Structure formats: C-alpha cells, structure tokens
Length: 138
Image (cartoon, rainbow, N blue to C red; front, side, top):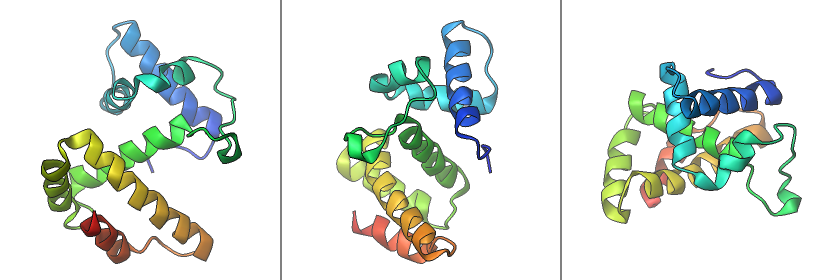
C-alpha cells in the first residue's frame, strides 16, 4: 500500500507534495505523481492548501477531493503495472474513444469505486474480473 490508514497523514502527503511543488523543491517520484493529479484538478487546490481536517460527507453534496485524487493515483498505478491484466489496453482504447487520458481515468474511477464499495460491503477481495468487465462496458 502506498499510503497509510491515517486520514490526516494521507492528506498531509498531498499538501506537502503540493507545497514542495509550489516552492520548486525537488520531489520524490511519488510526490511528482501526486502533484500531477493535483495539477489536473485546479478545483481541488484550495482543499490541498486548506484545512486538512475538513470533512467531505456525501450528504454535503461535495466530492471528497482526496478520495477522488487517490482513485486517480490507483488507476495510474494499475495502468503502470497492467494489473489487473488487460487494464492498460482497455484504458488505451477508452482514452482514444472519448478523447484523452484524464476523461478516461474519470470514467474508470466510477468502475473502481463501485468495485471497491462491493468489496467492502461483502468483506471480500475486489472482484478483478467483474471490474474489468465494467471497464470494457465503458
């Protein structure tokens, strides 16, 4: 696992990477990945530089920016390792079909989030075959 389980620690990692980027301080490879995701989401810059204890409850109608960016990082890790097998080819096809990497990742995030939710609900490992089938349907 790239990150720990502590919400504040995780959010601080985003904030620290972003601050280092803004200060033009050298970044670790992981920090560079985090910064790229933050740059792709200017609407989240305030959250990354703001109160890291803030709650983003679904009931409030706002997307949790840290969860969203974490899902982007998960998708990118899956693509880099082609795990589950075949996901990189699905991604290339989807990106060509809908016009780019970022929109394709957003579509894939919905499938990943649903798969993770089911896994959590059922107290079972994520169903990779079902996940890949969802992605193929996009």
